[in-house]
Image (cartoon, rainbow, N blue to C red; front, side):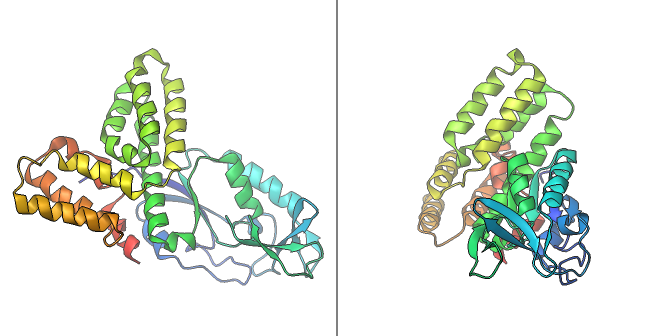
Length: 316
């Protein structure tokens, strides 16, 4: 069984950590609750941190020409500057963050679809805004996974987010001791996973590790990490996953019976049609990896990109 590094995540404090929403309630998220056992969290409530109480009068975003402001309509208090100042200070204080899980549609933490009112707040709002704190996150961490607890109810978004944060955590752990061999080992174990995200980026990473002894270690970590994070922003599509599955299948083509081969190819076609999830074909290949004791594939993170205990999340 693969040993996983623990991702370091920043989360809105109101999601499973503290009853600190504007109405004094807590937000439930089965994913965050289960992730607590497998990740380290830095919970934060930007609204409380800038001095707004619990409970508190609601705040919202207002647009005056091109300027977005954070305002408390009931009191007229404009907390834009305080929120920007806190966001900048807090985000710059963080080290080794692998991802963010923020409160959906919040005027401070919402990553998309946040209501934005015209100045004065009397007209119908737009719904294309980003919370002020979330916008600062995107500026400071443009390549780091950021999601909200609402979007993570989606099967594909959950799977992609989990894969990204555990890959980043593993990379961070592997480069922590300055050993070139750890990067080589990391790259080897992630070859199939990286191919599912982007062949072009995967090849760039391959060239970096092949020249690793010619590059100072800090420079290698920076370059490799940047290319990898850019790659992980892609969403693996079925054609790329099928190519990876077929590559792995090729390791067993001489050992399997005709009915076994036919069953796998039929299952692959069902995945291509969207009738079964990727996990079905991954598990079928994993059974052959164990049966034929294929050590190379046994180490490939593609077949277990995040802890098995979290797999059930993808079926909620």
